[in-house]
Image (cartoon, rainbow, N blue to C red; front, side):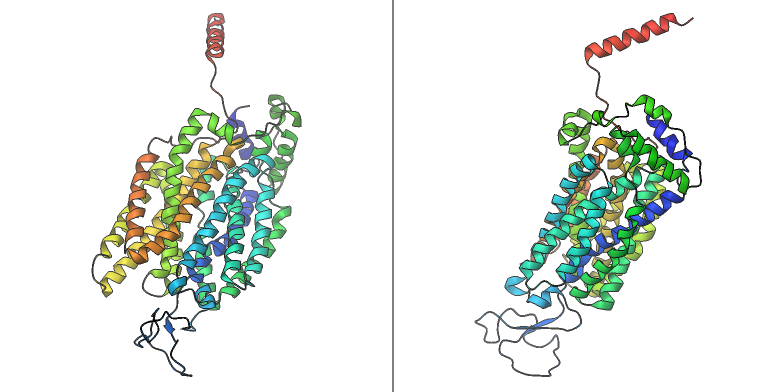
Length: 512
């Protein structure tokens, strides 16, 4: 069975038609609850103005930033640690809920790392699960879990309970992030894959999160909002299909045929003839091979590309999540900073689509890597100068540009990764790389904490990692315009190659 045949089936069933558009709208909408869950700590870890009030019994006092005990971890007597705090009532975060300042300042970054550890485990597990049982079950199980867990988190009574539940939220996010793009891409033709991945659903989700956080200003209400948002999406279970490429890759041709017929019907096209698939593949479940990480590691080329991509994805996670969670430490209004990031990210995704279809996946990624490195170095150098209005504005602008650039680079790298792996191990490979990104994301929040001790360290490290990734991306083959492969093609042995060469010579000799 030629790979082009599956592309032909998509074309005959309507190409990028009504079905694909609805499917992408649904799956990208599901990403909204992931976005809210992932970004929560940019609000939850925010520290409004606070004061030590150990030795102060005044009531109905308007606290100002020039008061002696403003952001002081030492009581007024100068000898004992502060144990009683009061916070500005402009917002309710987990910091204000559980007094996470001074000797508890490490808690917020640790909770974020715990959450990202959950995402890491979810990425790794889903990569194997989705290639064994399909894309659809883990997608909807993760959606249901995010709804229930967000609701549960809103009723946390201690920060330790909150941290534990956020680990499982991370686990569910890891599952959804691993499987969602593969499901959409496997219904898209080569020319539309960049659009599928580059739809700015994350940027739109960020805008919605910024507005919701600004309106609600309460960490419990934000979790409830996220849970309510996800409930209507459960109804799409009866429309979203299993990947027909996954069925073909596992020799379940009749199931693939039913999916293709449904796609053609919704697109207003006659059902294409796929009897040739039945002739090319034995239509029986007995031939269904189960693929594992060993199949990925056992192939020389896939092993090589995987090792190169591992460092690239670690850098994406380190830079993307490190700078993202560092937004809370930038000057200016928190909600405006998050909103500006989401607002500017949307058009850059469309620019990214043009660049990918014009120059390819690799060159596009390298362009945004260079922007990330330059912007990160700008922030790192700016921290060396004294505090000033100009420095604050320059730091904010460069940090947001670096965040936008590194997150835009995810699009070509995701597309490149998805197109590099065959269908039978695509989720395993993509899950592996997402796991590496979350490894970087676990470290990222700790770099944010380090940055409060050594100004600029987060951005020096992000710049260095991005520069290394540029050189590691170069040896990976460009996949622009290439049809997706569905099975691992094993190289022929010397004996098999000899027999094939002999057969080809005989055929040439027999030709008149």
